[in-house]
Amino acid sequence: MAEARLTPPPDSLDQAAFLRQFGGIYEHSQWVADQLWDEGVGPADARVSHFAARMAAVVDAASDTHKLALLRAHPELAGKLAVGGGLTAESTAEQAGAGLDRCSPAEFAAFTNLNTRYGARFGHPFIIAVRGLDRAAILKAFTARVDNDPATEFATALAEVHKIARLRLEGLAEQT
Image 1 (cartoon, rainbow, N blue to C red):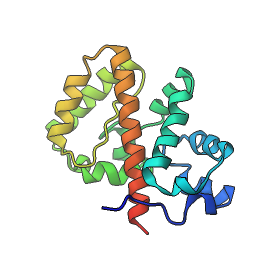
Image 2: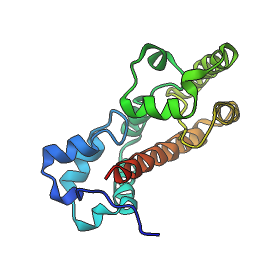
Image 3: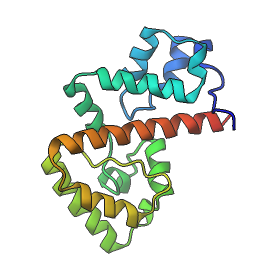
């Protein structure tokens, strides 16, 4: 199977088009795409795996302050922004795909409780790549992770952010 490719290739775009296309891959964190542009974009960046790895490397090289800001840019799952229609189009589609827009009252109460506990403990929202998961699987992971130590959860949340970015890039490649 051929590797997913971005079309048009990132290196064929001018800066404005590049930022329109890739500035939202990391939720409300255009600085990732800005830095990648500044580092230079080449023909290999048309391969999703290569481009995703470069974006992840930008995040991984950032300060913990920038990483925490990136985590805080993510919405809560089945949270206030979702209920109020304030999510990005990508987050809305991702959460709806996992059925989070159809929570029962008990599930919504569980998400609300976990969101409150998690946010108080870690200082950022719970993040999980929801594609391919249902509400029960997400709640199970959420319940397990709320008791992680802060360092483990910070690393886990960043790994999930990278998965989300990769899935968003794959989605762009599939649209062409």
